[in-house]
Image (cartoon, rainbow, N blue to C red):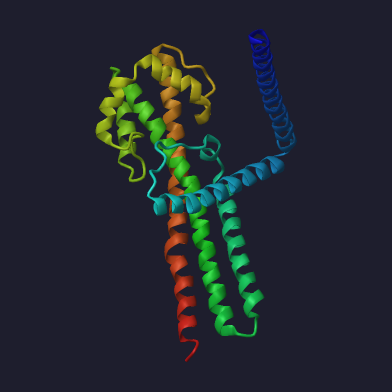
Length: 294
């Protein structure tokens, strides 16, 4: 009897192992097929500049829409149930290097879609005969659309901001421990970035930089750089010599300047759309709606 029970348990255990192995093989096969489909889609879209631009535009629009939904609904859950926010900041490297015109176009599409949906709901349930409702409703819908457009831009700007902070921190810690005129200039460049109101050390506090310096050896920093250098469009392996390191730092500084300029330009547009133009439409619509009974 004991022998039969043991035999049964062995068969059952082997069966579970076989099932697990087949499930793992199935998951690996699915991942492999997804990679192949993605490569095929990339080949189709990259055939012409128009299709490549369309792919980039759709990707930016998707990231905006997804992050806005996440912030609106998950942010409400966090505040309502007093949960802790997820620790650590992250960014999408593809979004960071995206084209400024495509970012603006995606944000405007998102904002215009919101305005049109609100206008449709107003006309659907109130009709077009009552101008006291229609006119302020359209103005308020435009204001809401501009606010969504501004929020969509902020999604992309936040990715750029975190990327700037991360790579500037890496560059600062990398250059700080070296000697020489060239490295001193690089440290000064990174310190100039900290003066920007939107850029801060990745740890969140400037006094924590000394702690970061103590924790990270140069070998670890170089490994991190070589692992993630394609994020900043640097495709040459960084060697353990002064010339290779200086070439990398020169490229990184130029990259950071370009991203910062794009960040500042988008931030200025976002501020204009999300503040005074939004207030004009919202205020005008509200005033018309308030005085309409008189």
